[in-house]
Image 1 (cartoon, rainbow, N blue to C red):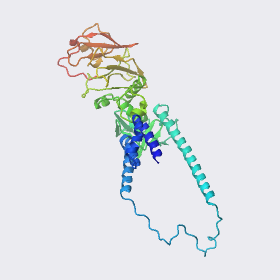
Image 2 (image 1 turned 90 degrees about the vertical axis):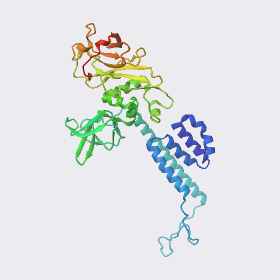
Image 3 (image 1 turned 60 degrees about the vertical axis):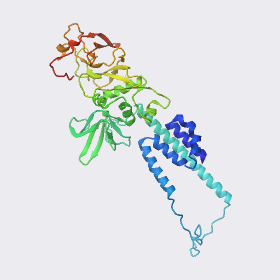
Image 4 (image 1 turned 30 degrees about the horizontal axis):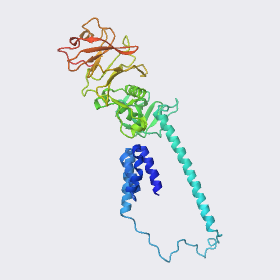
Length: 420
């Protein structure tokens, strides 16, 4: 029994806390006779919320049973352990051929061995299937709502899905534009849904509600993206789901991640990796001067068919003085193009805003100097007004600093704030 608990505890610590595997023999010695209780407590300390809840219930039941064991079932000394059929029933009173005790033991052991082998094979098959499905889901090679055209509504025995956009309106039809009053906010969990085409469907007494599937992701993907945002202001101001997906791609390609708690960190990065942690910290009040800006920085002329580009500053949690400026461009299908990151080490504590192209509505307030490039750019501005400001332009090799911008060209006395 001790060997079994040693194996169980070793497996648990390999899963939750690999650096404590060497302490298993000492823990078994200290908790001798209470090994089962220790297993439950390890699940409660390190497991997921569902595992913790289940372990607490089992621990409470185990302690209650241990403190108040039930009374033994009374048996009369005259009552035999096995009842024989009455002799008055000739059909039931047939003689049973005798077998040797040795043959009975061999037969029972053989049956147990076959049962164990069957259980092991079934367990291996189940674990392998779930692992492969989970890998396909995490890597994005399989999406639960990608059905063949004309497949119709299909039951979805799938994990919960989480809302990635700031808000998703329900629709009366999957491909229709008419929206209902039902809204799911960022982070809302969707369960018990079915699927039609590219929509997730909730059935109710008032009828079916259709939600576009592109705004939903599995929980592990949601946790990975949500960890990129260092405060609620950043979560709400980076509002589009395609912008958040683009951030996840950049973080993965560059081997960094957001601030994730266990066990999500091990599930996403692996138990043996400790990647650098970067996050976005937006200003509490949204304004045109922030850690992000939207515009058409990658286009010489305005293109209303494509979403705006996104420029956003990320900060290293290991060294808050390390900052990078990322720029993403999007095509009409909301597919992202990732541009090289711009290191802000020489320009600390700057906020950014859109610098409009020549001829735009606010151009005359910003472009008092006719020598500025006609292209739309990103302004690196000192919010304290004590250091120079610089204009960044997006070129083939990424963002480049073109020139210093005088302070009097970006101050607009007597005018309300510009909301871009």
